[in-house]
Amino acid sequence: MADITAAMVKDLREKSGAGMMDCKKALSETSGDMDGAMDWLRTKGLAAAQKKSSRTAAEGLVGVAVSGTVGAAVEVNSETDFVAKNEQFQNFVREVTHIALGGVADVDAIKAAAMPSGTTVADTLTNNIATIGENQSLRRVKRLEVAKGAVVPYVHNAAAPGIGKIGVLVALESDAPDAALQALGKQVAMHIAAAFPQALNEADLDPELIERERAIAAEKAAESGKPADIVAKMVEGSIAKFRKEHALVSQLFVMDGKTKISDVVAKAGKDAGATIVLKDYVRFQLGEGIAREQSDFAAEVAAASGVPQNREPEPTA
Image (cartoon, one colour):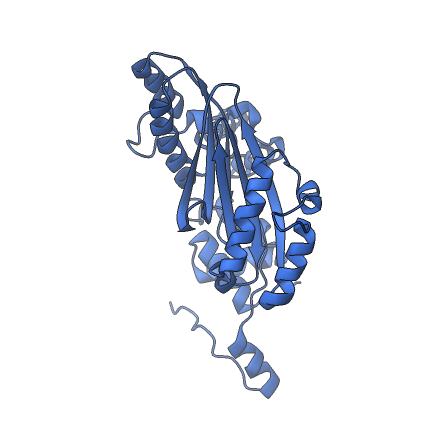
Protein backbone atom coordinates (compact mmCIF):
# COMPACT_ATOMS: atom_id res chain seq x y z
CA MET A 1 0.00 0.00 0.00
CA ALA A 2 1.27 3.49 -0.88
CA ASP A 3 2.35 5.74 1.97
CA ILE A 4 -0.41 8.35 2.29
CA THR A 5 1.13 11.55 3.62
CA ALA A 6 -0.57 14.49 5.30
CA ALA A 7 0.48 16.67 2.36
CA MET A 8 -1.33 14.36 -0.09
CA VAL A 9 -4.50 14.48 2.02
CA LYS A 10 -4.28 18.28 2.24
CA ASP A 11 -3.83 18.58 -1.53
CA LEU A 12 -6.84 16.36 -2.22
CA ARG A 13 -8.97 18.29 0.28
CA GLU A 14 -8.16 21.55 -1.51
CA LYS A 15 -8.93 20.09 -4.92
CA SER A 16 -12.12 18.24 -3.98
CA GLY A 17 -13.63 20.12 -1.07
CA ALA A 18 -14.21 16.75 0.65
CA GLY A 19 -13.50 16.01 4.33
CA MET A 20 -10.13 14.92 5.68
CA MET A 21 -11.11 11.33 6.49
CA ASP A 22 -12.88 10.90 3.14
CA CYS A 23 -9.78 12.16 1.32
CA LYS A 24 -7.56 9.83 3.31
CA LYS A 25 -9.81 6.85 2.49
CA ALA A 26 -9.95 7.83 -1.20
CA LEU A 27 -6.16 7.92 -1.41
CA SER A 28 -5.91 4.59 0.40
CA GLU A 29 -8.43 3.01 -1.97
CA THR A 30 -6.51 4.23 -5.01
CA SER A 31 -2.97 3.57 -3.71
CA GLY A 32 -2.18 7.28 -3.57
CA ASP A 33 -3.23 8.12 -7.14
CA MET A 34 -4.58 11.71 -7.00
CA ASP A 35 -6.73 11.56 -10.15
CA GLY A 36 -8.09 8.19 -9.12
CA ALA A 37 -8.89 9.52 -5.66
CA MET A 38 -10.78 12.45 -7.18
CA ASP A 39 -12.83 10.01 -9.26
CA TRP A 40 -13.44 7.83 -6.18
CA LEU A 41 -14.76 10.81 -4.23
CA ARG A 42 -17.02 11.81 -7.11
CA THR A 43 -18.48 8.30 -7.44
CA LYS A 44 -19.31 8.45 -3.74
CA GLY A 45 -20.82 11.91 -4.09
CA LEU A 46 -18.25 13.31 -1.67
CA ALA A 47 -16.45 15.80 -3.90
CA ALA A 48 -17.71 19.35 -3.96
CA ALA A 49 -18.83 20.92 -7.25
CA GLN A 50 -16.10 20.23 -9.76
CA LYS A 51 -12.92 22.04 -8.92
CA LYS A 52 -11.44 23.17 -12.18
CA SER A 53 -8.46 21.14 -13.22
CA SER A 54 -7.09 24.55 -14.23
CA ARG A 55 -5.89 25.27 -10.68
CA THR A 56 -2.57 27.07 -10.95
CA ALA A 57 0.18 24.46 -10.70
CA ALA A 58 3.07 26.50 -12.12
CA GLU A 59 4.04 30.15 -12.32
CA GLY A 60 4.82 32.45 -15.24
CA LEU A 61 2.58 34.28 -17.68
CA VAL A 62 0.11 33.76 -20.50
CA GLY A 63 0.36 36.23 -23.37
CA VAL A 64 -2.26 37.08 -26.00
CA ALA A 65 -2.06 39.36 -29.02
CA VAL A 66 -4.29 40.20 -31.98
CA SER A 67 -3.72 41.79 -35.36
CA GLY A 68 -6.77 42.17 -37.58
CA THR A 69 -8.36 38.76 -38.06
CA VAL A 70 -5.47 36.85 -36.47
CA GLY A 71 -4.78 36.12 -32.81
CA ALA A 72 -2.17 34.16 -30.86
CA ALA A 73 -1.76 32.92 -27.31
CA VAL A 74 1.34 31.52 -25.59
CA GLU A 75 2.23 30.25 -22.13
CA VAL A 76 5.70 30.71 -20.66
CA ASN A 77 6.37 29.12 -17.28
CA SER A 78 8.71 30.06 -14.46
CA GLU A 79 9.37 28.61 -11.03
CA THR A 80 7.97 31.50 -8.99
CA ASP A 81 5.46 34.29 -9.33
CA PHE A 82 8.27 36.72 -8.53
CA VAL A 83 9.79 36.11 -11.96
CA ALA A 84 6.43 36.85 -13.63
CA LYS A 85 6.77 40.41 -12.31
CA ASN A 86 10.23 40.77 -13.85
CA GLU A 87 10.27 43.23 -16.77
CA GLN A 88 12.77 41.11 -18.73
CA PHE A 89 10.50 38.07 -18.42
CA GLN A 90 7.38 40.06 -19.34
CA ASN A 91 9.05 41.50 -22.45
CA PHE A 92 10.10 38.00 -23.47
CA VAL A 93 6.50 36.77 -23.23
CA ARG A 94 5.24 39.73 -25.30
CA GLU A 95 7.87 39.21 -28.01
CA VAL A 96 7.22 35.46 -28.23
CA THR A 97 3.48 36.13 -28.50
CA HIS A 98 4.05 38.45 -31.44
CA ILE A 99 6.28 35.88 -33.14
CA ALA A 100 3.37 33.43 -32.88
CA LEU A 101 1.03 36.13 -34.19
CA GLY A 102 3.28 36.51 -37.22
CA GLY A 103 2.61 32.93 -38.30
CA VAL A 104 4.74 30.61 -36.19
CA ALA A 105 2.29 28.33 -34.36
CA ASP A 106 4.50 25.51 -33.13
CA VAL A 107 6.62 25.52 -29.96
CA ASP A 108 9.73 24.06 -31.62
CA ALA A 109 9.41 26.44 -34.57
CA ILE A 110 9.07 29.41 -32.23
CA LYS A 111 12.20 28.36 -30.33
CA ALA A 112 14.12 28.45 -33.61
CA ALA A 113 12.64 31.81 -34.66
CA ALA A 114 14.55 35.08 -34.33
CA MET A 115 13.81 37.62 -31.61
CA PRO A 116 13.96 41.37 -32.37
CA SER A 117 17.49 41.30 -30.92
CA GLY A 118 18.55 38.83 -33.63
CA THR A 119 19.14 35.85 -31.34
CA THR A 120 16.80 32.87 -31.41
CA VAL A 121 13.98 32.46 -28.91
CA ALA A 122 15.74 29.38 -27.49
CA ASP A 123 19.01 31.26 -26.95
CA THR A 124 17.19 34.21 -25.41
CA LEU A 125 15.36 31.85 -23.06
CA THR A 126 18.68 30.28 -22.04
CA ASN A 127 20.12 33.71 -21.36
CA ASN A 128 17.06 34.68 -19.33
CA ILE A 129 17.48 31.58 -17.18
CA ALA A 130 21.10 32.49 -16.55
CA THR A 131 20.48 36.16 -15.77
CA ILE A 132 17.21 35.83 -13.83
CA GLY A 133 18.43 32.72 -12.04
CA GLU A 134 15.34 30.60 -12.39
CA ASN A 135 14.23 27.86 -14.76
CA GLN A 136 11.76 28.94 -17.47
CA SER A 137 10.08 27.18 -20.37
CA LEU A 138 7.92 27.92 -23.38
CA ARG A 139 5.08 25.47 -22.84
CA ARG A 140 2.43 25.96 -25.54
CA VAL A 141 1.11 28.16 -28.30
CA LYS A 142 -2.05 28.44 -30.37
CA ARG A 143 -2.98 30.71 -33.25
CA LEU A 144 -6.48 31.58 -34.52
CA GLU A 145 -7.51 33.19 -37.80
CA VAL A 146 -10.79 33.97 -39.56
CA ALA A 147 -11.35 34.92 -43.19
CA LYS A 148 -13.51 37.87 -42.16
CA GLY A 149 -14.66 39.20 -38.82
CA ALA A 150 -12.54 39.47 -35.68
CA VAL A 151 -10.41 37.61 -33.17
CA VAL A 152 -11.08 39.18 -29.78
CA PRO A 153 -8.58 38.94 -26.88
CA TYR A 154 -9.20 38.97 -23.14
CA VAL A 155 -6.80 38.66 -20.22
CA HIS A 156 -8.02 37.86 -16.71
CA ASN A 157 -5.81 38.84 -13.77
CA ALA A 158 -3.65 40.91 -16.10
CA ALA A 159 -0.12 41.66 -14.92
CA ALA A 160 0.23 44.20 -17.74
CA PRO A 161 -1.53 44.76 -21.10
CA GLY A 162 -1.72 41.46 -23.00
CA ILE A 163 -0.20 39.28 -20.28
CA GLY A 164 -1.64 37.63 -17.19
CA LYS A 165 -2.83 34.43 -15.55
CA ILE A 166 -5.64 33.53 -17.99
CA GLY A 167 -5.60 34.43 -21.67
CA VAL A 168 -8.58 33.96 -23.98
CA LEU A 169 -9.08 34.43 -27.72
CA VAL A 170 -12.50 34.27 -29.42
CA ALA A 171 -12.70 33.88 -33.21
CA LEU A 172 -15.88 35.34 -34.76
CA GLU A 173 -16.50 35.06 -38.49
CA SER A 174 -18.95 37.65 -39.81
CA ASP A 175 -19.63 40.72 -41.92
CA ALA A 176 -21.05 42.46 -38.85
CA PRO A 177 -19.54 45.81 -37.78
CA ASP A 178 -16.32 45.47 -35.81
CA ALA A 179 -17.79 47.24 -32.78
CA ALA A 180 -20.50 44.59 -32.49
CA LEU A 181 -17.96 41.77 -32.84
CA GLN A 182 -15.65 43.27 -30.24
CA ALA A 183 -18.50 43.67 -27.75
CA LEU A 184 -19.74 40.11 -28.29
CA GLY A 185 -16.22 38.69 -28.30
CA LYS A 186 -15.41 40.35 -24.97
CA GLN A 187 -18.56 38.91 -23.35
CA VAL A 188 -17.94 35.40 -24.69
CA ALA A 189 -14.25 35.59 -23.70
CA MET A 190 -15.15 36.54 -20.13
CA HIS A 191 -17.59 33.61 -20.06
CA ILE A 192 -14.86 31.26 -21.30
CA ALA A 193 -12.44 32.49 -18.65
CA ALA A 194 -15.01 31.77 -15.93
CA ALA A 195 -16.76 28.64 -17.26
CA PHE A 196 -13.74 26.70 -18.58
CA PRO A 197 -15.36 24.87 -21.54
CA GLN A 198 -13.59 21.71 -22.70
CA ALA A 199 -14.45 22.09 -26.40
CA LEU A 200 -16.35 24.34 -28.82
CA ASN A 201 -19.06 21.76 -29.62
CA GLU A 202 -20.28 18.59 -27.92
CA ALA A 203 -18.90 16.51 -30.81
CA ASP A 204 -15.42 17.94 -30.17
CA LEU A 205 -15.20 16.76 -26.55
CA ASP A 206 -12.30 14.39 -25.88
CA PRO A 207 -13.60 10.77 -26.16
CA GLU A 208 -11.35 9.71 -23.28
CA LEU A 209 -12.90 12.41 -21.09
CA ILE A 210 -16.39 11.18 -22.00
CA GLU A 211 -15.49 7.56 -21.23
CA ARG A 212 -14.03 8.56 -17.89
CA GLU A 213 -17.23 10.38 -17.01
CA ARG A 214 -19.28 7.43 -18.25
CA ALA A 215 -17.41 5.08 -15.89
CA ILE A 216 -18.04 7.42 -12.95
CA ALA A 217 -21.72 7.81 -13.88
CA ALA A 218 -22.13 4.05 -14.29
CA GLU A 219 -20.68 3.31 -10.86
CA LYS A 220 -22.86 5.96 -9.19
CA ALA A 221 -25.98 4.74 -11.01
CA ALA A 222 -25.27 1.11 -10.13
CA GLU A 223 -25.26 2.02 -6.45
CA SER A 224 -28.88 3.13 -6.77
CA GLY A 225 -30.01 -0.49 -6.91
CA LYS A 226 -32.38 0.23 -9.81
CA PRO A 227 -32.96 -2.20 -12.72
CA ALA A 228 -30.31 -2.36 -15.47
CA ASP A 229 -32.44 -0.54 -18.05
CA ILE A 230 -33.04 2.34 -15.64
CA VAL A 231 -29.34 2.44 -14.75
CA ALA A 232 -28.47 2.66 -18.44
CA LYS A 233 -30.85 5.62 -18.89
CA MET A 234 -29.38 7.31 -15.82
CA VAL A 235 -25.88 6.96 -17.26
CA GLU A 236 -26.88 8.36 -20.65
CA GLY A 237 -28.68 11.23 -18.93
CA SER A 238 -25.56 12.04 -16.93
CA ILE A 239 -23.39 11.99 -20.05
CA ALA A 240 -25.82 14.20 -21.98
CA LYS A 241 -25.76 16.70 -19.11
CA PHE A 242 -21.96 16.56 -18.97
CA ARG A 243 -21.70 17.24 -22.72
CA LYS A 244 -23.95 20.28 -22.50
CA GLU A 245 -22.15 21.69 -19.49
CA HIS A 246 -18.66 21.33 -21.02
CA ALA A 247 -19.19 22.34 -24.67
CA LEU A 248 -18.95 26.10 -25.12
CA VAL A 249 -21.91 26.62 -27.46
CA SER A 250 -24.33 24.74 -25.17
CA GLN A 251 -23.11 26.24 -21.88
CA LEU A 252 -25.38 28.71 -20.11
CA PHE A 253 -24.08 32.26 -20.32
CA VAL A 254 -22.52 33.13 -16.95
CA MET A 255 -23.92 36.66 -17.09
CA ASP A 256 -27.56 35.54 -16.92
CA GLY A 257 -27.38 31.82 -16.12
CA LYS A 258 -30.14 30.88 -18.55
CA THR A 259 -29.20 31.68 -22.17
CA LYS A 260 -27.07 29.25 -24.18
CA ILE A 261 -23.92 30.73 -25.70
CA SER A 262 -25.15 29.72 -29.17
CA ASP A 263 -28.27 31.84 -28.56
CA VAL A 264 -26.18 34.76 -27.28
CA VAL A 265 -24.20 34.70 -30.53
CA ALA A 266 -27.33 34.34 -32.67
CA LYS A 267 -29.01 37.33 -30.99
CA ALA A 268 -25.88 39.47 -31.39
CA GLY A 269 -25.89 38.63 -35.10
CA LYS A 270 -29.56 39.51 -35.44
CA ASP A 271 -29.01 42.84 -33.66
CA ALA A 272 -26.00 43.60 -35.89
CA GLY A 273 -27.83 42.64 -39.08
CA ALA A 274 -25.39 39.91 -40.09
CA THR A 275 -24.83 36.27 -39.21
CA ILE A 276 -22.06 35.72 -36.66
CA VAL A 277 -20.33 32.34 -36.45
CA LEU A 278 -18.34 31.39 -33.36
CA LYS A 279 -15.53 29.58 -35.17
CA ASP A 280 -13.07 28.74 -32.39
CA TYR A 281 -11.57 29.84 -29.11
CA VAL A 282 -8.42 29.53 -27.01
CA ARG A 283 -8.30 29.45 -23.23
CA PHE A 284 -4.86 29.23 -21.65
CA GLN A 285 -4.73 29.27 -17.86
CA LEU A 286 -1.32 29.44 -16.31
CA GLY A 287 -0.09 26.07 -15.14
CA GLU A 288 -3.23 24.03 -15.86
CA GLY A 289 -2.40 20.35 -15.92
CA ILE A 290 1.13 20.79 -14.57
CA ALA A 291 1.95 18.94 -11.34
CA ARG A 292 4.05 21.22 -9.17
CA GLU A 293 6.21 19.71 -6.47
CA GLN A 294 4.99 20.53 -2.98
CA SER A 295 7.60 21.38 -0.38
CA ASP A 296 6.75 21.38 3.32
CA PHE A 297 9.75 23.11 4.87
CA ALA A 298 8.58 22.55 8.44
CA ALA A 299 8.12 18.83 7.77
CA GLU A 300 11.57 18.60 6.18
CA VAL A 301 13.18 20.26 9.19
CA ALA A 302 11.25 18.03 11.58
CA ALA A 303 12.24 14.91 9.68
CA ALA A 304 15.89 15.94 9.66
CA SER A 305 15.88 16.62 13.39
CA GLY A 306 13.87 13.56 14.34
CA VAL A 307 11.06 15.70 15.80
CA PRO A 308 7.59 14.34 14.92
CA GLN A 309 5.20 16.60 12.98
CA ASN A 310 2.07 18.04 14.49
CA ARG A 311 -0.79 16.03 13.08
CA GLU A 312 -4.39 17.04 12.51
CA PRO A 313 -6.52 15.63 15.32
CA GLU A 314 -8.68 12.72 14.36
CA PRO A 315 -12.40 13.58 14.54
CA THR A 316 -14.13 12.29 17.64
CA ALA A 317 -17.44 10.52 17.66
